[in-house]
Image 1 (cartoon, rainbow, N blue to C red):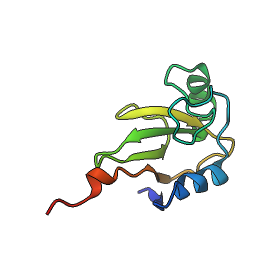
Image 2: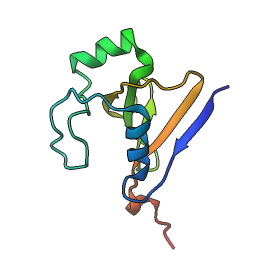
Image 3: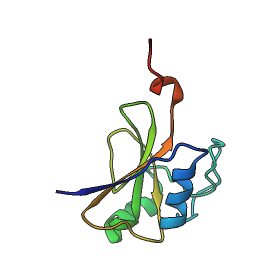
Image 4: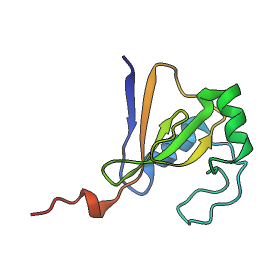
Length: 114
């Protein structure tokens, strides 16, 4: 059974900053065009570094995914379902742990309907 580590602070990307400080994303991609705060470390699934790192150092690969709740999460490992893009970090994630980092809170879908 895996342990789950959750970074879920919702104030102005605090969970994302904690992720960046802890795991040190490798800035090898092009500067981000989406304006969501990332500079050079979101990698398209076809980027050659992703395939290489997934084979050689898989504990350094992370996947940004669309969550079922409408939020975006960063999760450790190489995932295909609901993936947006990949992140490679200089520091590895811990074996036997599942990480769930809230990357983007979709407030429209998380508000309760009366």
